[in-house]
Amino acid sequence: WYLALLMAFLMVGRRAALPERCTLYKVVLLANITLLALTGILQLFYDNGKLLWIRESSQALRAIGPYVNPNHFAGMMELAVPWLLGYCWWRFRKAGVQAFKEPQAPIALGAGLLCMVAGILAASKMAAALMVAALLVLILLSLQTVRSRIIAVLVAAVILTGLAVGLRNTELVRRIDDFSSATAGNLGQYERVVAWNAALPMVADYPATGVGFGAFGHVFTSYVPPGEPGLWAHLHNDYLEVIVEGGLVAGLLLLSLMWLYWVRVYRVQFRGSLTSAIAPARLGMVLGLASLTVHGLVDFNHQIPGNALMYIAIAAIALHRHAGDES
Image 1 (cartoon, rainbow, N blue to C red):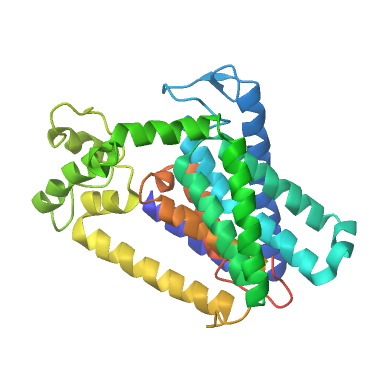
Image 2: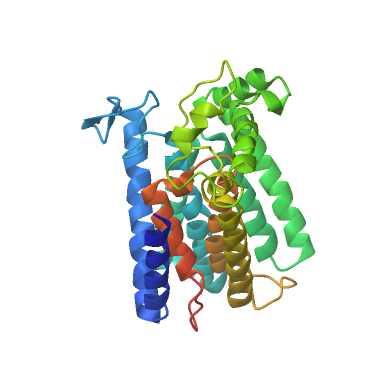
């Protein structure tokens, strides 16, 4: 699995070095995500409990499009929202209202809002929080003056307050309330924290090379505390799961690759300086990647083939910056 993702990363990275192919990749990827968002919204309102209205789901969760878990559907939306809205903003900043006379800006705005609505309706607590955080960072780093940033923060606060009121009776707010009630302010009682604590002895027992990739679900049954569900296919923490399955060798390799990658992205996309305003299209792409990277701390989006492949493709594209292209 990791070898396949590495090969995909290298292939897309090599092809994206050509400007025309890089643009084609972006158009196809964002079209796919937008179509997925539209399908998800339709299924949320016209749902028969099946995957794509056709196939029975193997889990008790509400299916959205091809996803049996709405959290992973929302994870895909995280990748697109800051990128699409950042691109629309870049077109507007460059040409003003004239930008909306061409199809690119209206399409990007409509698709970005569609993905944001789909992500919120999927009722993933983490995805909703990360999308909001990504958009706030996008605004703050893309504006050119302190005054405009202060105004933007105030406007964002008003909008967020309105959203909080408008979403009061939605599934997302109910899930947040259920989470608060279940933990009672003690995150140690959260089922995922319990599982992470239970997995730590696995690292101590198999420190160098882990229990083996793909073996987590089989070995973990011997470490689950009494009274907890014994069936865990994934640890809901991609990074800890890599260490459990691949040991400290895999953990150090992953940490090194992440460090090298983000340093390279910083140098390629931001020219080594964050003191001036950054092109919102480029920043949005990186923020989408950062959102799903952070989301990996509490979920397993990178174990879902569609999400992992989309993440890898966008990550490879982000390593290139072509003259005159800020998308």
